[in-house]
Length: 223
Length: 271
Image (cartoon, rainbow over all chains, first blue to last red; front, side, top):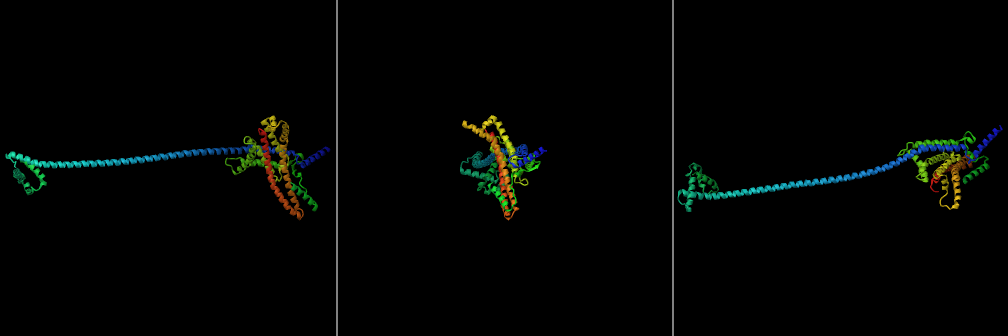
């Protein structure tokens, strides 16, 4: 009994002591304090900090990765720009080459045309001059033939007639007479009807000489 | 402090003289709040609130950090801000980038636990700082104490750890004295001050708040003059609340900062 009483009084004293002396730790509180920090430390070190540190690490990696990506993109952009520049230059060069080729073609065509024109002009000029020359030669031949026809026929006639026709007057007279005869149809009776009508104009129409000559020639040969 | 003591003193005197009513100034007994059982093994209110604080902190921090992503949500952003304060502002700055990460969980736990328990001193419905009971600061200090000695001995060896306490380049004759002082610092002063600083601030702060609130409440039961006097008393109590909020944060910070500093000291290559 007495012991119990003493014990209880000690307890109450201790309790009072615990309440009154703030610097004496209440042992359950001290132990529980250790438990508190122990539990919290376990939670923080296994659940909270690893998650957050992982996020930080990922964030750091993401930022670094982002920077690398940005660098890559920059390099790509630079390459793209170089390619574009190169292509532009190539295009320019092609355009220039085309223009030059086109110009050369046009120039060639114009040269060909010019040469053709020149050649044609030359050819026509040559043709023209040849024609003129032929005409002149023909004219000359006609003139010389005409004078020669007289001489030949005179010679021929003198041989035939047997008399000299040296005398110009006589000669001329003979020829005229011969010609008149021809026109008169004495020599060629088949052609009289045709030749008799234009007879009076005969002498003063030198333009018709050619025709006449032809007729004469034919007549002469026939005679 | 002086002002408070004066106020308390005059209040008692005046009350005693005029009305004959009785005003009992708050005593350290207000911290004795046994809930279950009594005596040396009683479970106190502070223990319950301390347990609640651990539960709340665990649940909240796990919830806010569980889906930690590169792009933080609003909750994660808040959590990171709180975490970075202890991680970068305390651990990294004090210990250095090389070793700090290993001690971040401990320092962050200490900071979070002390801060919430301190703020519970002014937060309804608790209105009682857990760290006002010296058992809790001693428990936390014990952890820090063991940790910094442990890592110091692990790094330098027992002999090296003690040798490392004395700075290099001292004249031979002064070394024993310095060693003695350092020994006291490492083994007595540091843990004692660490625990007592936190305890003292919380204890005194709570006493002040209780004093102003109870005095104001007491004035309201007295005559007209005292009823008027209750107004500045309550204003003072409100000011004390704000002041305590700052002190409580500061003490949590200081405790963590000094713990980090002790760890850094034990890890340092030279003194």
